[in-house]
Image: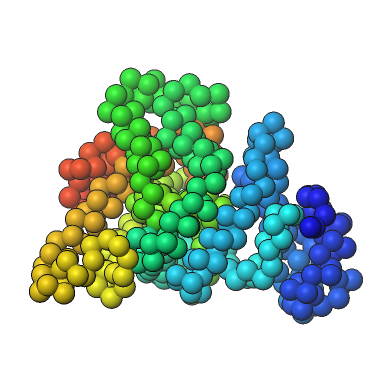
Length: 417
Ligand code: SR1
Ligand code: MG
């Protein structure tokens, strides 16, 4: 058994990890390691360790929520779930997650490939960077990981074992259940919005029965629809990019949940980036950026549907919608009908998840930099107000929204005031 857990420090990292072959092989003698702490997320320590030879990332869970402090304890086992998810995602969509070189469960340490010169996607979008590959890369990622982690593809025993394994990620699910689906809809202590201009919207939300019921309907799905291994926190802060590479990081919230959760959270973050553009440097490129963001969602969804359909036709080897009931009996149309219904359910549910994600990022505890970095308060409030109207509409009316062209028209209409 290894030593008891101890948080790493810049000064202790080389001494504590210097004997680990995986690090030594890449970085060489620990005497030459240069260590910096770069974690700016809500939960963990993240170190970049470089030497003259190469670089690595060392991520360590803290026994509490970094954003709030030691008053909010959080189990270290989340790194176990992150590690096991990264391995599965690497097999299901090769090359799209950082390579893991070492995992120490007792220390909650994952050592990973250092992605450079990658940027966090959220930062890139705030800077106004057009990234032509992300729609396609992310569409493939969600289709492959969600399909291949489900009963559509997996052997039933293996899938049930994974369902049980990830069922223990209770505390991180609890964070989402509270922060995403409930807190924004009552006077929760942790709620905060940064512009008093939003006070009337919050007051309206307290009386907004349709939105409250919608949030609870989505929570019901989140808690009960154990459909596949979802990333669980797939926002633009969990993606790193260059012009020609896209990587998905940080799956510590992974559990067996609804496919639509990952897709909805991802799209919501693109839509929030869309509504935040007015608050970022007026360099004349922002209209282009807005078009790019809406195009990205459209490309991502169409690639998702195409890849999901391809896997449906070629890798549907699990216990659901067996070929023996359809294609093998000459009823290929039956399989098509079922596919259409499955994709339609994902479509409707993703709109609900996206709408609640928008609400919690503006009115709950964990905000996002797209809006937070807008210094002018009135501008920030105007951007947030448009995003909230958008989020409410797509969530409450999710069953009636016909497709992304309708969503695009709504976003453009709200944007132009
Ligand atoms: C207390 S954790 C707050 C948020 O940070 C994570 O990235 C998740 O999005 C979580 O909801
Ligand atoms: Mg994270």
